[in-house]
Length: 452
Image 1: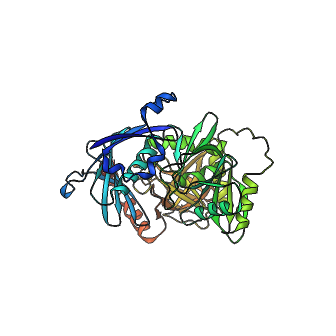
Image 2: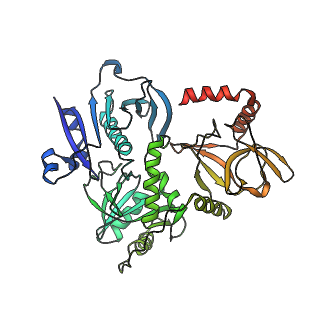
Image 3: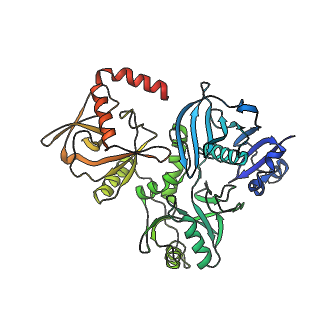
């Protein structure tokens, strides 16, 4: 028997329509279930963020749809393949090991979708589909779904970010053990949303391996980026450092311009308004106490006025400063001048301090007053360097060796996979591509048709 249930997460309401046996597997969503009458009682806006319909398995997976693959992301035996159909619908297929468990098929705009189940790990397929749909449908609503652990302390939420294996859950447990009054809110995927002039954090039904599904909301106290070290040291993050720390931890389809713009807006606002820190730490009691003292002092000071958003020139200057100081910087690339190797608006590059550059390197260079490009070196003659974008049909840029501010060592894909720009295979492909310059117009046209 079919039924429709409403859920509210971070004050966004959505509906799921499915057979009753599907809902018996969704116990993690129960704290977030609401009724239409409850929403009416509190005067809530019942305009749904999105609607999902679950379609049950059929023999031979005859309900699956055909689609063109755009990208994929793998992590710990799980994989999501993303693409679109000939009709323009967006598709996300969820794999557990080698088995496809189901597909999420969304209409453009991410307001309606259907989940196609294949009879293998149905809960896994539904859970991932709802999480993906939520992240995409709310990206334009100053809302972000984070990959982080979060604890509450004295009425505020403290988030711990970092790469997989950094110790987010471990550090949260250290606060629970050594900082009295701490409570775990979510261990994997909390939600952050702008309310008025400040950000709030919310529990969610998605909490990784730790079953912590709490329907809680509180002001954001601070965000802490973690990295492992043989000591405990914490410092504030501001400007481009704060922005760069946020990007890898926020879920979203960044090769979709509308989604990317929404995420950039919320990331930029968080970087301006929120207190952010970088904690280099050991997994010990001292780390929790050092962090707590810095981010949640007992004697609180008045909040400072948020600084204005950094301009593009300021962001570029800060990125160059960090590179010159020896920091590897992940930098987003815009435009299509480096197709097919770098896709602007989707990919980023890792920039490092230039040592000895050579022809074939992809570099960040100053080629005119306040005009920077990420292009490939095609020729070096003494101090003079000639560059050209892989996706350009004509035209080159010239600069001096001193104008090369950074070397791009890797491309970072939307699934966070890193592709080397310096290994022999890439350099060989780049040489072949350059020699094909007379045919580049037609090759790029084919590329855009296949990967549009």
